Image (cartoon, rainbow, N blue to C red; front, side, top):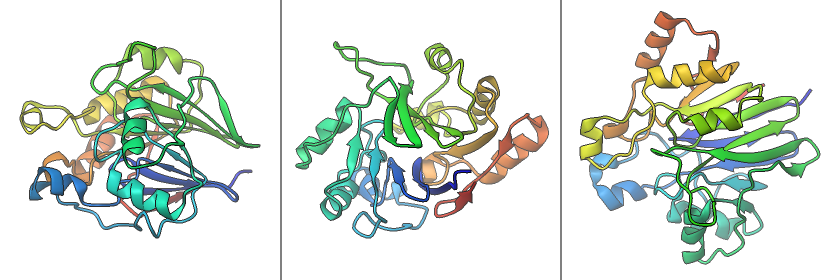
Length: 256
């Protein structure tokens, strides 16, 4: 059986480790958002590590080009320290990486790609807040579906429910889904915060995908964008959905 560790990095950042391979998703390991948009966006969680001190990474995945997901400060530090990391990213994130001098980023595939004998992945659409493509058909925002040994893991990136997502994932049996729960609302829109699903939407999304375990994401980093873990736990206790719930704070690890 595959040994698997999932460590949350804050926001939607994730470090996924097997016995021989490390994958990282959307690391935000700086204070760039506050520097760009003001102190109300100071980090609320500690750095699990920095880009320079991160463990050795084999493959890095980026979901879209927003600053808290594709952060030039984090990526410059990480890729300077580890220039041989294999990076997959949609086109706007590739443009960011190109501007900071990293030219080797790969376009992620909608077909299954093998990374190692027991790890493969493909992209799925993300609707942030709708599914968007450029003229050649490439997705602007993506999620990632991974098969790691006997586990199937869905990292949604930033998304709301969309029929296209359900269509492309209709035949998948998902063991773990990482779904964003920082809802869109009038007040967040007024601050320029592009939110994602409400808790109820995320729970229904997980139920519709028939996932075994839900890990909520995008709830812990910024005060104007936060969701209290007590909210998540309370709604889960009231609705009693069929899936398991794992609330992981930044730096916490789930071992399978």
